[in-house]
Length: 158
Image (tube, rainbow, N blue to C red; front, side, top):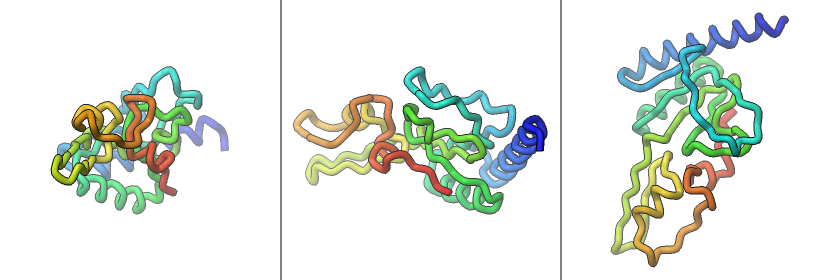
């Protein structure tokens, strides 16, 4: 199969996936095929830039669940973007659906129990900005890295 034909098939698969996501998730930002403006993953990314089949910007756990089911129905692997920075581009892979969690950046901190509950898109800077200065928590050295991805070593689901 020629490279051009393979690229065309992949683009059509991305458009079909994005269309199905839009049909089931009204009001959610979904990008697929050539309509994805992409995400600026920064100059520190040492991997070659890749364009996923589709990308969805989820805001709730229910939206994530629906997106994962639709990806499974289309037999498409999933990559999770919890922050912007991954030096190895595991958060945006060719042939994948990217479930973008950056809008799910809520932090609920309980000063009594000294525990924080964080959303999938929370970055180091967002978490540290919500905690009191006497709290110690493991983070990354980069303020823009998503904590969930850092904690899991980069999340990719096949």
